[in-house]
Length: 502
Image (cartoon, one colour):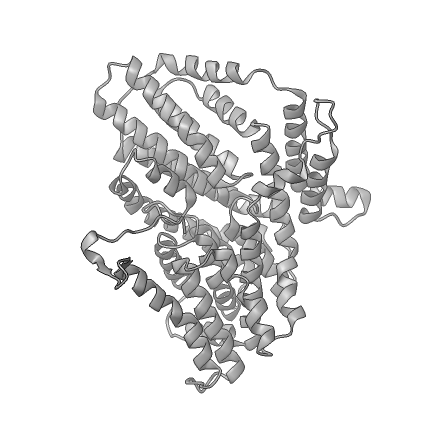
């Protein structure tokens, strides 16, 4: 979730006898959040379902507890993710070692390495330079400018946080709009449509771009970690790109056409002053210094090593993994000195205070509770029940699941959603006799199809919080783009997953 609160009207308040105002909504939220621990407490003394033993009831009750707190954000998401470390060993449901191992999964360190690389790009403003050069290459036509923002945000979100991408791109978009409004005699409606197209294109481009790499968005990494931990199958960086990148490119193209040609056409041609503005921004940044060049070189090296990992292993007869590559590049950032001559390195440890450590804990908690669920056998029970329904093919089941996930990811964090549903999805795939990676991977992509509401992903929240558009602007596009995305993923997702992820 993005943390955007839904406020209550003044008449929804009641007065405390001490004069403090207490929101009715707050009372309801507190009562609702007590449901989680209460259900867990009841599970310790009462087992209502005969097909579950006491231990299974307790794990399911803990999952419900975590689910409620993840959805409502009663406490920060990472704090909820620490509950397995407290509850499972304390009540002898699982030993501490079994509970703690998932928190150190290799995929967590892969994501940590991705965070560190992204941190270096941001520290040396390389992400901004990359975005400006992409915009420069796209030309000065209005629709080309929109496409430039789409491509720039999608490319950056493949490697860095989509939150950072959106925050960095927003002021660039607003300055472009201000410049066009000032220097153009265009119809205000056309300029407004251009602005909305830029904002939506940037946010949706960031959402879609994150699909293309394992480090692009948390659900991808959660899948890789769960599959490795549970089934001892490694999803490689290159293999994931071969599977996801074609789908991401198709979605980006359709999204761009839908926004600029159907929903918000701007009917504007060439904007002469745009190239001047981009050149001025680049001139203000100056030429690439040695430190920025070093950062760029390490960024390219990481990408090349991830892509050519199999060849490297064959050539040198080693067993280099994606996580090892991420850690190797991360260490180099802390070794290579800057050009300042003060002994400072490209990254100092103090820089890591900006890393989203909570996301790593969130991954660990999700993997831990998923492992506990698998250990009880409840996932197999539900999967077998679903597959026992007569006359329902795997194609229909996958389409129904995708539609459910797309609706849910509009309302809650796709990270929490992936954590909760991935074990069930993988078990359903196995019940149909399918490779769990092949069945689950398209579902994971569907969780990034957040186009209707601002709550599901940070880029959506960023553009909505800017005050430059309304929810209705997002809904008009999302109402069409959500089902189109599900259709594309369901049509080609299983085929590409079978081709590259087995």
